[in-house]
Length: 362
Image (tube, rainbow, N blue to C red; front, side, top):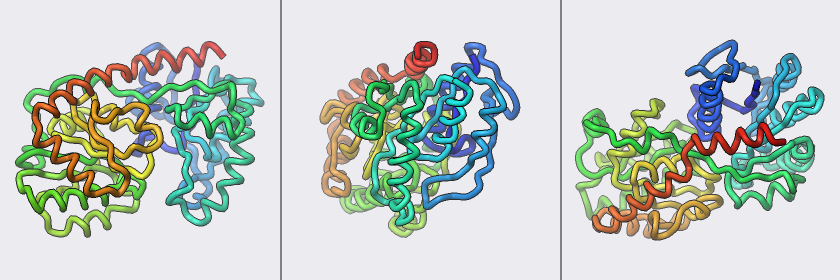
């Protein structure tokens, strides 16, 4: 079986959709699927150069259409709804009479888009996405929350819900964890791990940290993520506070696992989320979670079973929830066990099997 994953970015990008594709592709290779050209960790990568970028969220690379026409694929699997490459790949699949699968990755919001982005959105969703959905054999929703939107744009009757997953490495207890030593950290760690994007709320994390540090000096707040426009804001908010550390992005999966296991609490203070990989990774690592109850998150996380919900921007709630988990060892231990157990539902090996089933049962 020969499968084309079509996406807006891949390594060295750090992003959820990229990681989803990487996890699926690596398992396909283990099953003997063919590989060719540029290899990144055994995954065959074809680069398509974009002509231009539209607004702040879309790259335009029609060359993907011609690349897909040149080869014979058994399945074309597109990723990230609303982007032009999905439309071009869908046309190629139609011409080649190839099975077409699409994973949305839950992009449904108008908030924090540029003015140009909001102007073009009705064209992208109302025309190109409708055509793409019509051509799809199956559409993968990563959370039930987005079914309403997929149906609105013509995907009714084609939807299968398959959540994101978690790698086995996060379940394994790491001996001699050197994360704190390598980063010169003392005390308990409260962790933010995600893109420094306004929708992820890194500024809210820092504001909550500042409030807690007025009362406690034995806690270290650690921020890890690549910059998407908020790094300067975060640095300015941190100022000279030595108990808040902003680290460089971490790419190595073992190092990421060490980071989680060195922490006490994971905080996800986002304005919006589809279904973040970090939620399941923190669960598998045994971390209690404080998160915004947005989009797909409440479908997979329960308050207080897995941690606590705080509305976006509610700094007082973030502060109180973090302190409650740090101060109540019995509670945090109970939640830790709950989360490890819940994470078992989302192992990538199982997610892979569900995806392969769609490839072979159109």
